[in-house]
Length: 542
Image (cartoon, rainbow, N blue to C red; front, side):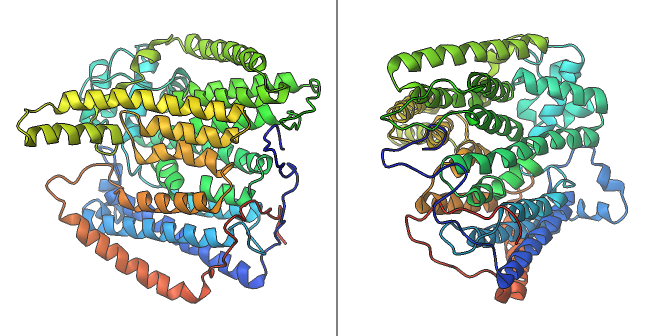
């Protein structure tokens, strides 16, 4: 197996893959060109529509600009334009998936996939933040740190005042709450605040650069991890980096998950870079030169990801399983590795916490998001359902109690699933990176709060490790559905829900016209065998 990842039947070497695919022919390169342009036009439409339909700051600088200011006065039209862009990007991504499907005779190369990703991201860099207003909370909390105050004890309203331009951009529900983010992220945010002050547009641009840095790290790590685990690197990039949820929520929405996931994946890849290949029955070679050092470096980088958002810390458990298996797969190896990685984790996290001047206050605010009761979280929805049933049965309104109980159940189920996956990985029954993706998904789905971009914690690692067509199809359908379901406004439509049908109909009409114009040039389906998922990919343009 590759980098310690083995099954009893063996697997591909890291530098090769069974069923190496060829480069696209001339007709397929034409199809790729059409798909690229279709997605780029969609990105441009989303950028234009965001001027009036995005989660713009309270003091919108675009409002007074000639021509561009018109979009902020025509929100329904802007929303239709933005949705047109969303639909076109999703369709382009699906078309790109046909050209990168494992099992095809010819597939997109890694450089071609990377250039496609750059083409689609370039217009999105200039969009108004959309799908969420979290970036304004980042700015306000970073300003609190820059002023020398503790963001883990006070919220933007108390620290900055309700009339401060950065506070006014924060959603009302979060103005009184302390920061739930790690010390590394707030330290980076402090630097942003020093550079941009209370200039909202420049602050958003700086935080978007951090998100792009995180995405670049993921793009670097994904194909390398995919090769190690016998998965097509092109397929991994398609699902893990070109995914519309990545484009919409990490690039356009400027979520710090980009930085946390990027650091987590880079750390995992660095740690595996010197790991010897082993099988369950051995042999287990002695330490390679520099092997222990790279384990420590990888663990340190993963810990930095956890210092942005704590879920990244779960990767240390699955990295530890791989190291223990490489040493011989005995319990003494597992406990020894756990102790070593624990030391690295505590040292790096303490350095980040104390070096930031914020200490460990972040530990007490990790559950801040739980103050919101959202139907999107299965355990919260279960509590709502149980409480509502009690009302119907005449037992009184106990919705809050029901939600508390259901969330407690979820807080037990998620970690138990993660522990089971760790044990399965340790016993050679499961690829550790697959276990990591599923474990992150379980912990987050059974958590108190769920957002569409939380799916990326599971989808991105699984893109590099879960090598089966059923997973790829399921992930594709879920990603596409969530991508088109959430409006770019980053807010509810209370009192104006009637707007949505008009915008969806208008956007669908525009998208269908665009689709009709390029229909004959689009890639056609090429059926792959159900179990053909680990095909290789060309590494350069023909």
